[in-house]
Length: 149
Image (cartoon, rainbow, N blue to C red):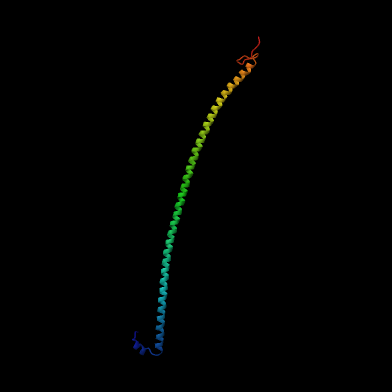
């Protein structure tokens, strides 16, 4: 129903023409409203896409950070185990060395005690001999008692 503007005037006269004009005006306003809403929708859609991209980028960065933390934790844990193992090895070596030193010291101490025993025995003998020499009447120089005949 396209009429030329002259023809529309002549054909749309009276109430039907007024109704048609109101409808055309309503259609024009609704189309304008539709364009505004579509523009707003497109703008919102653009914002959603940007937010989605931004959120994806932030999730990616967060994932990288978490992986870095996990790697650091694993290295620290492995380093701790390595340090613990090395420390245990060192302690075992020191303990073995300490036991060896203790044994060597004990052996040396026993040897010193044997040497001391020999020296003390000589001293005891000398003392005995010395005591015997002081009492010439009763004991000969060998430490035996003199019996009178």
